[in-house]
Amino acid sequence: MCYNCGCGNPNDDMGSMNNITNQMLSQLANNQNKSLEEIKRMVLQTLMDDKVDSNQALKEMFENAAKAWGQSVDDAKNQALRMLKRELVEG
Image (tube, rainbow, N blue to C red; front, side, top):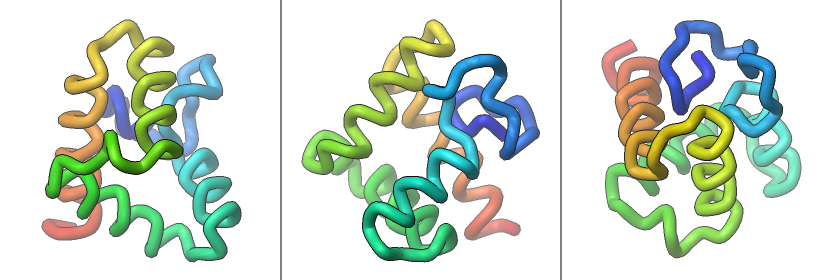
């Protein structure tokens, strides 16, 4: 599931490296010396707390993803929030 569009495939960037995938989240995890699971949970919590704009890396990630998919930043955030909740909370 390109997290910002909800396509259902976590490893398909849908032709744009700016769509949020497991690979992108893995790179973010490596940059922050965290596991993929930790980064997913951090992104989920940041989205739930509506604090994305206070994290420059996440802010840029969502802005780029929104542009890549032709959606608003809020739509990208909301879609990612739904997908991460489904994966990590309801899973």
